[in-house]
Amino acid sequence: MIDVEHLHGTREQLLACDGPVESWRPDAAVDTFAGGATGEKAAALASCAARAGAGHIVAISSIDVYQYCVDAGLGDGSGAIALPRQPLPLDESAPLRCRPYPGGSAEHDNVAMEAALHECGRVTVLRPGAIYGPHPEVRERLLVERICRGERRLELPDGGAQFWHRVAVDRVGAAVTAALESSPNRLWACNVVDPYDWSYAGLAAEIAALLDWEWEPVRVAFNEADHPWQTAHPVFCSDRRLRETLGVSAPDPRQALAETVHWLRDHHTQPA
Image (spheres, rainbow, N blue to C red):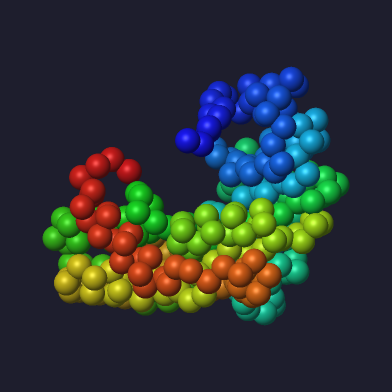
């Protein structure tokens, strides 16, 4: 049998001086920053990792750190500009934003979290897109629930051309495992996204095909309808580091989406 030690407690308890993590002395620390990433949380993690002798920190961030995402109107839309200049796909050298999102909160700021880890030695920052999988998730769930309710009318802002890069949850898990094994021995960031994706209209069509459904699409003005991660410009990120350095290529997005959609159909009556 394999002995497994389960550390259970609040974040403050686990990361405290002489607390469970420090006493456990792990080789690496992986932090998903559940409930919101902040500079303060990252500083507490770094301090605990140093005391515990953990030589590697893997921090789960987001592609929302890029300034281009502000220019595309992510957040409350007020930061959108008409002519964004950053070329796509965004790679890890793209400019980061320097402040929280318009309409956002400093209680969840991945840029501040990443900055607090800059002097911590070997740090791998994973930047996922919008994570989907066999669990309640907003964009896919929204479309599946409409189908389950028998709603055929589907409003498509500007024809549904909005594109916000997504990633299968299994790919995120594979990226964490690969980062622990083979990421560079320094501060290093890596986008974690699917190799291809769908626009909002394309995603709606793919989900309808999986559930043998037909929409009645209605084109509306951009500001007359809303859906999760509606952006004025496409947000598409490079997965080159993920593939070439970490060696992560699975799962295929069509297979992962099908698993998500069928799970959501079977569990659509459960609260989100």
